[in-house]
Picture 1 (cartoon, rainbow, N blue to C red):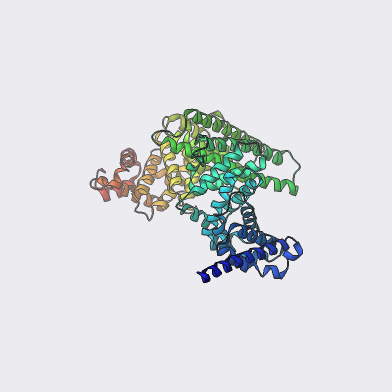
Picture 2 (tube, one colour; picture 1 turned 45 degrees about the horizontal axis):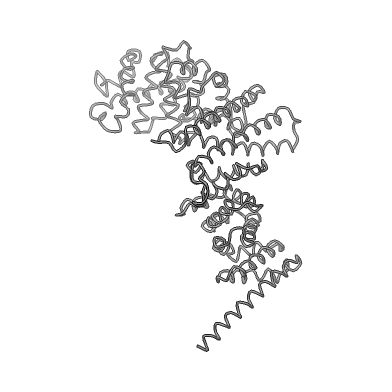
Length: 575
């Protein structure tokens, strides 16, 4: 008993002495000259060890203050903190700190110093799990606080999550069993967007929202906004409505500013160039969020039941319609000034394409007027239009299912851009893109147009389709993919309707080698009948097979080489 009491008293004395020592050290370090001394920096590992031993909050607070003051004052303070595995200690401590306490404030500012003075790429690679724990702790402060520290948390979270090096952190956050961090961020973002705060803070909230969605998906826009049962219930779709409304405001303001800076303000000034770059970067965030909302609405439409009210849905649609109208006006302005190259106008085409993909009937007169122009736009790093065409393919594919849509695509010359895009994607001189989705959308658009060729009163330039024949032979040359074979054969069969073997061989972009390859292609596609057409893979291509068979019966006499190859492979009558 006696020994036990002595031991207990000794522990109590030691703890008191330790607390006094740390308090004195922290007090001394409030003098910058002392905090910046080598003696103080050398004590960083010792302070981290004390923190790891689980002392009470008063000791921990003094330790955090010491680390902050020394790391801030000494040029090597942050490096010493990092090298002493301070990130691990910070991560383990932050989740235990009281909301809004001095300790959490010091901790957040230490994190800010670390990510600003050291490589965030290195930190992400070495401490992704610890960063994920920190994000959760900081996100909680962002959600629950209502003072200046809330905005510090906002900026810190935005910097960490939007970094180009954050892939390991994103993966760590996705793998966490509890995703409460994303709820905290949603609560904080809504608080910022629905209150009267500076425009710069609202923009930061949008940056954070976009980064969070990139990690967890568009569903984040709809979710609970109450952290306790005692709070008044808030509609779960409020975050989505606020994000869209704030993004719409940003889009309108940024497009107006960009138009002024690019077309009216004094040219060739460095400040103007920097301002344009910054606004384009912010515009990309706002555009991304608009596209996220469009995608979410599309996904919700495919599900049974509705998690958003009819009123909210109408608000979303009205807002999107107005925003797309603003974007189209910006594109009109760019067209009037002869601009066809730029990432901002390419991004504008992308957001218009995303919207029209879901609502092709919104292809109004303004869209028709700008369609040819939008298809001619290039990104800063592109040598010819490509991405702009891919962005509009979903809409073009859908509208060409009707005659009126084919007339639009033909009269505006949009089909030429689609064919050029397809040649670039699959031809020998193209990029052979891995995005089969875009390739097949382009193919479907061409098929839709050619099937209705007789019904539209607009002549088509056959030279484009002759060039496409060569690309199709290259695409199918070494493949056993039945969907590729049947799609290419269908396009060829429809092109052959308006020409002959003799006419093709006189074309400068077509030779005897192309004819041989096309003969083999048609023979292969017509051979997919009987038992082969009963396979699950072939059943999906039955409609295409019928188009090829029907086409062959119409033009076989005009293509003797193809007829010979078919008869040699399949017999007299293709099935």
